[in-house]
Amino acid sequence: MTGLYIAAGGGGDPIGTLMAARTISVNPAPPRIATYAWERPEVDPTHRPLGTVDFAGLAREAGGAAAFTSATRARLPAGSTMPGLARDLPARLLLLDPTHGLSSLSRQIGSMAKAAGGRIRIVDIGGDILTHGNEPMLCSPFGDAYTLAACHLTGIPTTVYIAGPGLDGEIGEQLLLERLTGHHQHHPLTPSRGAASAAAPALAWHPSEASALWAAAIHGARGAVRAARDTIHLTDVSPRLYHLPLQEAVGHNPVAQALIDERPASLEAAADLSHRLTGIHGLAPEHNRTPHHPPAGRIDFLNQDEAMKTLREAADGADHVTLRYAARTLGLAWTDIPALRNILDADTPLLQLA
Image (cartoon, rainbow, N blue to C red; front, side, top):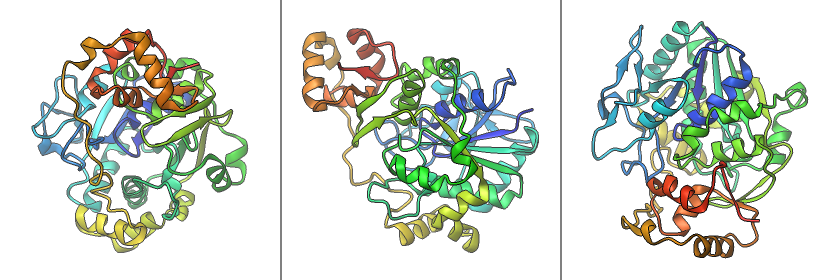
């Protein structure tokens, strides 16, 4: 047993968490990765983390944990990429259900961790888990803070890993390096290309950007990348995996500290607390953005040369674009990403424009 890995933010974080797990441990067994089913609005229009009642076909682990399989399905109107990730990632994906409050989530994590060997490793892709709550590009601090607080309440030894500082576009690389002080900054891990390649089947279709950026950086990509929200710069720091004790991470995160102190009884009350401290409501970070739902069938008329010309013009000098950004720019749905890759002969985590 290598312990329980937690994909701190849900969405595409299980992909990056697999790469981190392959780096942290040499154990060949598939890691156990616990994750929220909390997706972008184009994937799930409900704008909330999904619980066990939102899925059909969850498997049950010893100890009662709910696990995703390729046969699991989200109940409409909810949507989820988790069944596809369960199919394509060499890992056991477990559902974190935060809908019954912080104490319930902590009990879930504690039970999962004990079944996995008694240690917790939280993995955050990009580093917004170290937010101070006032960064100008901060978008979604609540889920990470909720994870930190729940793990603290378990009392189980926990390490926090930061993969690819700044790659989620919420806190800059240099600022994060300043927060990763002391020996943590000087002894980061660097995943192998094999660790990144293990995630390739999932990245071939998933709209994840932060995990795709990290995988691309591990494979050697550098330069400016146009993503859905902003332009991200891949540097020699981008492939690295940093670590720090749980209490240091909590010390950076005022929302996690307040959750531990106040222990709100419901998810809604916890989200209200996050809103009070950061101005961002945890359950509605993207409500003011228009979901991207283009008409079906547009990809049938796509021409490779014209598509690349459009992307180069839109990217405004960037060296790469994410596949999520490419699909949006071309008026396609995220589900068109595999077909778009085929048309553009793209077989890497990012689409290279140069």
